[in-house]
Length: 167
Image 1: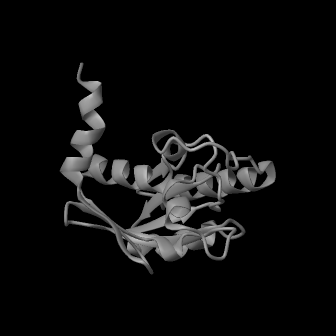
Image 2: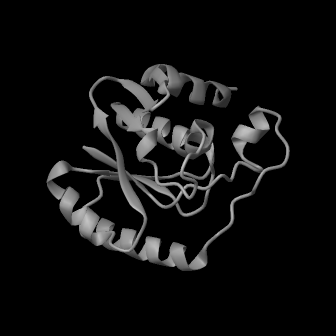
């Protein structure tokens, strides 16, 4: 299946989990564009109601990297993502921005190839880009023009996610 990123990525790492883990201060915090949010959610609701979306995950807590990992291990499949396809307001964003920005109103959607044209038509007027595909590799692989950024087994990512919950 194809994987689409819906919404615009901005350099908004202020207050993010990436900033917390990296002990970073400053930066822009995510801002809501109410008009874009309304259009995005209306279009996505229509696509979901029409049965065009197989799975959907928000990109809030941890950004694209976390959403892609959670989506992949929830389905027990692999996922390949091309960061260079991520829609951004900056023409040359850093990989960290594309991976970890927590810009509002962004979602990762899985769409079957047979329904891709319909999905894209349903999302007319909304920022959307096909950024990758689901695979049967059992790995999350993220690439950009700078090379392979992430190549990790889904079961290892899932264990890292679940381990702190076992107390």
